[in-house]
Image 1 (cartoon, rainbow, N blue to C red):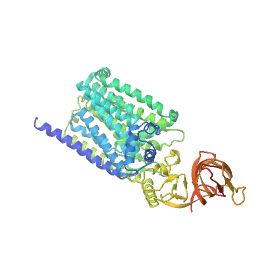
Image 2: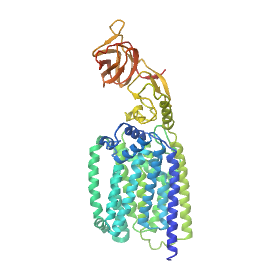
Image 3: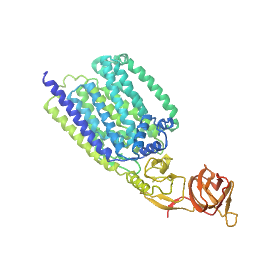
Image 4: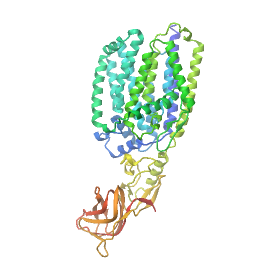
Length: 593
């Protein structure tokens, strides 16, 4: 036995590492096969226009998230290689490797190098439930560090309980703080760890005394973790706009149901196999009724088989159910409204932590004592073959879903658009400025303004011309990202001025009526003028901020991007002794020439 045991342990460890390496190859294909999407470009825009260490950047309310470390990491990568997908993709693989290794450590701490460890590990590594939260860079910058922190914290908490060595409390707290800095949802980590320890004690026969025992043996961890949790919640409430929370409980319940039926059940058997997508939305699971029923059958069989084999598992299953509800209801309360589509729940991007918690609880359940009379389920060649066959079928089914997801994910207009814009800007580098403008709405829409502006998304890209509020050569980007010569539509116009052979004489503040009112928007003004010298003026609409406009001597034209509304244009000279004659010109939107 002393000779054979290390070999057996080594075989399990080698098999686990082989699974992780295979899993990382699959994740690498997913990562490098993707590109920037939506929130990724918001992070890029903010990193390009704000200081990386400014509190306004690090502690921005990003759609209800407080994530300073995620902002910092994204900012560093963006500063070093702006809009180069290779480095974000590499960061995804590295973060996933850390999360997978931390999970293996937690499983080893709970189970040791028992062959049964490979069962929950295989599920966690290959289930499609964790894929959407991985491929989207902005989401992965939240979830992957959180999962790493969760697994490390759980492992340290178990070791602290066993050994009493307070060093594990210190390392666990470091991991917890790191998780919080990346994702506020990390506040669940101490609760998950406490549940794991209490269930381990309960399954060993301590009954309900497991709660007091777990608290007493880990008090050096639970009190600091509670204090840090309270402090982080207070910070979250200060940073995040609480008005985004919904009270639509019926929609929240509907989303939770849809997440279970169209996400979790198919994911148990490697589903959904099929993904659908309407650009610019992210892919959503579209499982068949067969896949949903197969998942329900697998869940029922798993519950029945584990309860036949193990004692006291009811509380473990209830804990998993409780986490399923508690981890998703707050998200859906924040995201749901009367106009929310149930497809939100089918995107599955809120499930990576549920996968890890289910894996940890599965490991806990495997430590439960066997029921008398269940000897027919003891280790045997037949059981090993059956388990290996089931895992192989699960991995094969998961890979089918993974390939299907990748095909859908690659239908991303941002990838060719960004490449074309970079090429177009490089081609005119050193020339006149390009007027700032919105990027294609299929790439980033106006709801995230100003990050959808060319000046934000491509702030760090070089080579390129200046991107500003004024230009002497009007050009615009088409939906493919190509730069075209442009003109201003005659939505409104500057009316003809009262001064013969001059129009409007601008020597001090001058207000020029338009042919009609303008609604609030970003408008482009074509200013045709005759100047006596080089200088600058302030330009503004009736309601809107001022924009500084450089002018030159002689007969010239300048195009101005003006936000605001109203029925007049105001010019105010900045340069002393500057005099302009302003003629009729259009005020409207950009259009190809």
